[in-house]
Image (tube, rainbow, N blue to C red; front, top):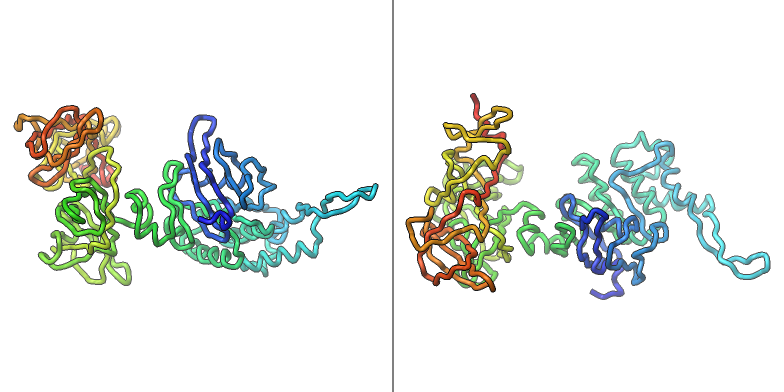
Length: 510
């Protein structure tokens, strides 16, 4: 990016608070003049802290912030050509609309060249004239469509009108950069949508740089020129809304931007990936047998009659959305969210497929084995997929202070409530180093064949595939050969489960 086109540059910015919490880590970003940039992420990801550092309300622990190429890292807020619109508008309730917008102008001092009593040149400061203030306030109110409300009490305004007053107060000082910290969060859904369009139009009229903070991906997609997706104080991806949505760099971004189907998958050939129990052609090339994440957007799932698609499915839910239907299909125990203009009935059997260009294959950060299609049998076992692979599991991990009664129900010892977890869908995870491989095939809960082996310096990492084509990745210091058949055992204490629905859905009616 051309440095001359940048208005804001954050160079390896880090912010650590006194308690040792690191809110922002190695943040490196360039923002172009006139751009609408959105910092997007969940609560606690560091986006507001980043905005406060640009505004000057918080000083970085390290790194630099440049404005037009000049270092403003330690410059106080009032010396920066930057204004902020806060989540809570902070309007003066005792002042009318005009006075709220004019407040900063009436306290502003502008420099001019004068002379001292000896006739020597000296920089002096003077207030803006009432005529200039009137002109600037009128212009700002016109931009936010409040030109007829100068005399209104701010307490009598709607939430959207108060939001416009806050924006007018910020832009009346003609800042080079406008910072907006979740400014629409207090508005209802309809007003938020209306204000999104108005903010985009204000940005076009003003032609200045907007830096917007939100956790709402719809806001980010509808308003931004550039989206910066954040996680744990760091940048995950920077790009246009189209790029972020269509080409997410990882499962986190895909899940955060729009609705997505995300599956564990394995590369099984040249541009060929296996997920949902089927093998699909794709456009991404990864090494053979590499574990990957696959993302499929709901609108990209194709629904056919049984036998015509790649994998068979059944309609689990159907919701009419006006122009189309939204379905949840079941492929075994795995859910597939999809949309179609065709009408299918709940319980109807179908098949599905996905075009290669619509399958996003991404590197997987492999830290554990994860199974999203796992379920409980209500008798102390967790199953993966259908009914072929199971492990004994401690279900009391789902509720602190619980026990399992003689009928197999989970019991809250404090409230006495009982929960029937039969067929409850769960997310199962197993640490890589907690999977034990055995030569004795009678010792494990299931068995498989070693597909690949990699030496990682102090241990081997094996990919073991069962007859049911489920994959287990195991880290162990012991050596096996590719092609060896082994038993797979996991101690119940290392099986971690999390319900896919709230526990309250499984309360046993007495």
